[in-house]
Length: 173
Image 1 (cartoon, rainbow, N blue to C red):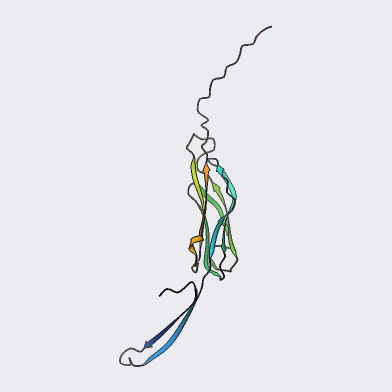
Image 2 (cartoon, helix red, strand yellow):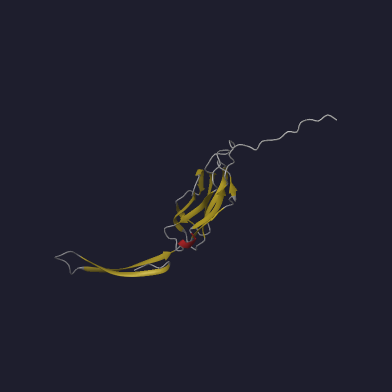
């Protein structure tokens, strides 16, 4: 039996003693009430283009409980497909044992793009920023991720030959 996302479920059961007293039984009723939450992930502003080796501070991922009930063991985590995340801090901390309806976890982080600034010419690379959330009682997992893609532009090859300059000879008039 699957407990619904909201409402309650009643289970009647009987417990009997072991032999030789197997006829001694007791009955009971258990009512389980479901209280679903709905965690939703969102990303703050992300740049549309980044340079190789660029460090971008104060990026954010916000995970909000938009459900009617408290979210149990609520989580929030930013990630990237390439590059690295550092200086990650979430308030309140994650996982959060109980996150009230309407409350949010805000994670702030620093992103470092792959490559080296001024390095060799490399093909453009796509990076996907993702925020992921969830809770033990999250009844709507479809909105638990948010993603934005950005391009890491190629560096200019500083070692490449430059076209020759022509300098006109001075003239006397």
